[in-house]
Length: 291
Image 1 (cartoon, helix red, strand yellow):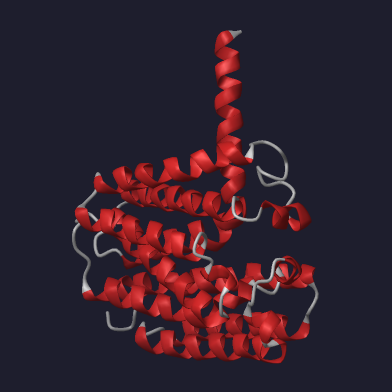
Image 2 (image 1 turned 180 degrees about the horizontal axis):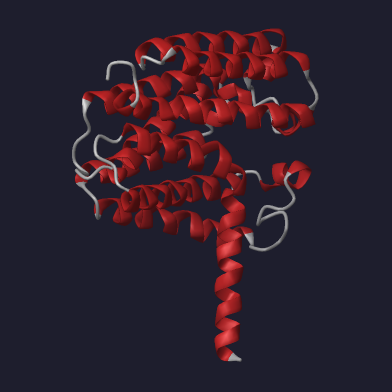
């Protein structure tokens, strides 16, 4: 019975940790894992698995911080998260939030000093975004902090996935810079589905502040980045056709459908587009027409 009790306790905590990160599995863990596998100069399977865990651990650190700020927002539209579902008290969540910081740093330091620096940068940007309220500031500043956070994610994850945890080549560095540009100009695709909750707590996202500009900016961003990526990563004609068609499809969805449910579906498709965009450095390394 004691063993069963321990098993249930561990199972409860693992499920609770998963629920903190559930909504970011598709938006961060999967795309950044694909990015790390594609961008790393010398990846291998077991390091890619470790990289995925590194990403999830840092997503957990961010999400616990984010979800302890304004739990009432999740009461409105995300009831299954640990705080609104009463799986965890707010006091316990605060303790977990700050325990995760040294855990992330120590885990990262096992790989390299540069991986540790990526973790430190990510924690600092988390504090800037959450505790220092960059998330509630001007939409452009919010987008830029988001992009910097993803750049830190991708740098650390790519270092972990690489055989040499201390160095990245020019292709990997270019990939991270391009990804930061993509996030800066298109990350507000995530804000359409959350517009009710964001408006309730006073956030000034682009879809709230500039409603008439927000959706057309998605079309411009996706189409321009599709053209840029196809050129930089030397996509063959068939690959270009598939990628451009997907960008037009996602753009059409954001323009044609305006309700919350459809925006959620459109955001899923945006993450498909983003995952393919993140995989293209690997295409360039191994499959491009240069070969």
